[in-house]
Length: 263
Image (cartoon, rainbow, N blue to C red):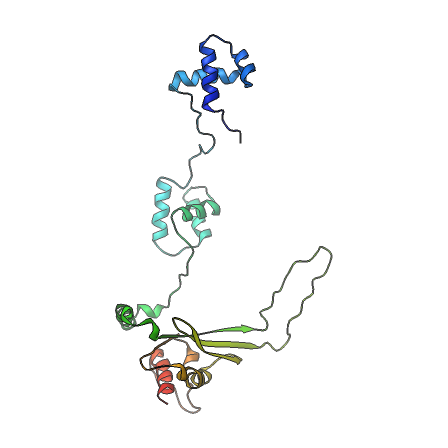
């Protein structure tokens, strides 16, 4: 985009014009267009100055004013996707696109975050326990906290596509037929990872109890607070022929851990 002439050139040109020089002679000396002198004289007469006007950006953003207020209320009303949020203004006659909506969201200081939470948190008993936990968790010494978590990898997690010059086949290899799973579980403390354990296969209640007994318990000290996910594989398996008692899943995982710790 062409930059406007500086105010210095504008003032020198108008000073020559005030002295009686013609626009053509001024343009020849200053190497500008004769029409510039005429326009600058008109600008000074109408505005009292010679500062250049704004170049570009004259179009008002679509998502501004009332449209922006509506979009802010829509954002605060519930869950949405960026593409769905682009379609809703279009239904109201507001012509926009995904890029414009993303720019608006970024300007509002919003970022894409995880949204899904377990519905169990809405249960009164769970909500009461969560409130009590949040109230007292700041009083717990961080060195006492032990978080148990796991991750896994499967042999079929291989890239399916890649880049290759046109006309040449891309060949890669991966295990075929019998996919395998490798699980890594460990305890995370405030300053280190302890009790790491790798098993060849997915973890279940029996293996988890074995991990707690053989790997986790030797690393624990009196007063440690162990925190783990509420997962079915973190519960003890019932012996064959016995039915599982009807109790809350948190009691199940707690009993598995306590049984291992007390053994």
